[in-house]
Length: 95
Image (cartoon, rainbow, N blue to C red; front, side):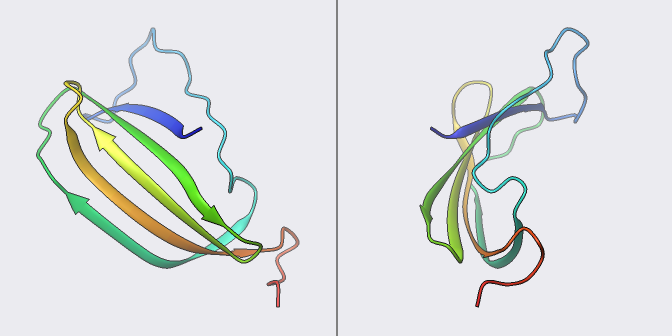
């Protein structure tokens, strides 16, 4: 299931909004970015944007993540993929 987060374009948090909680498959792991590709498809000047991300492939050493950003009307405004090198939690790379 993709992780979801919602943000106001103005980067302000509303007082009655609950704190965002979501699980991420790479939380707590040390990673290094191997590749990052972002496509901006439309402008958002105000309102709320929603980002959903999903780990689409993962091995012991590499993870590929895909993300999509939608505006308040549900229009796709950005998308991207990232490839990350995963290291062991203690900080030593898996060789």
